[in-house]
Structure formats: C-alpha cells, structure tokens
Image (cartoon, rainbow, N blue to C red):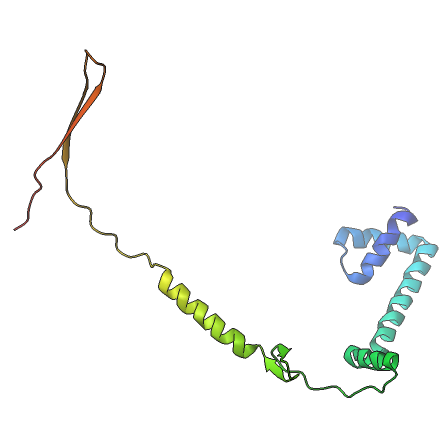
Length: 159
C-alpha cells in the first residue's frame, strides 16, 4: 500500500473501525514509512487536544441567551425565566394561561369510547341454515330462452 491508501486508515484507526487485515496493513506500512508515522502521531495529538478542549467548553443556556437578546433589541433588561408547565399552554382573552391537557384528555376519552362502541368484535358467526333448493335449467329449442326452475325442498326439523 502507498501513503495515499493509508491516510483514510489512519483516520479510521482513531475510531476503532478497522478490520484486522486493515490494521495489519496499516501497522506494516507505518513501520516502514516515517511520513505516515509522523502523520499518525500528529493526528493522535490533534484528536486528543480536540477531545479535551471540547470537554472544557461550557454551553450557554439557549433560552436565557434568547431572552437577553430580545431584551437588548427592545432596549429593556432581561426578565428572569419563568417555570414552564409540562403540558402545552394557550392564552385566553385575559392572558391567563389555560392548560391544553384539560381540553385534550376529555377529547381523547370521548374518542376511545366512540371507538369502543362502533368497532365490532369478531364473534361467532350465525350458524348456516340447512335450506336446500332443487334447480332445473334448460334451453328451449324453439325460442332459445334459458328456463330455470327452483323449488325449495323440505328441510329437516329437529324434535
């Protein structure tokens, strides 16, 4: 393998996704190539630095930063954060919050009851009746009409 083929393997080695054959080829090439050996060391140092640097970065609270930005644009001071309810809230005319849970829960219950009443359960089908009919069919030679007679025969009664 040449250095061009080894570069992707050097990067994949840090992730631990190399097959044993790829790992053996990488080790054999790095043992004979000083440039790839140096690239492997530099890549390892860079990854280690980035991991430690990323662990030390503090991420600001997005909600707080957004409120601060809006207040600065309006020329006001930022208001402290209010505790948010767990369920969604809509506002009425008087700007009093109304919880959507109390609207959605009865609606869901009504839907469940409606489904329970209108969904039929597969039950035992009615027993087939034992009616038999005798049919006779023929074609009239003179007119060409199909003539069909059906007569219901007597059914057996129990008892």
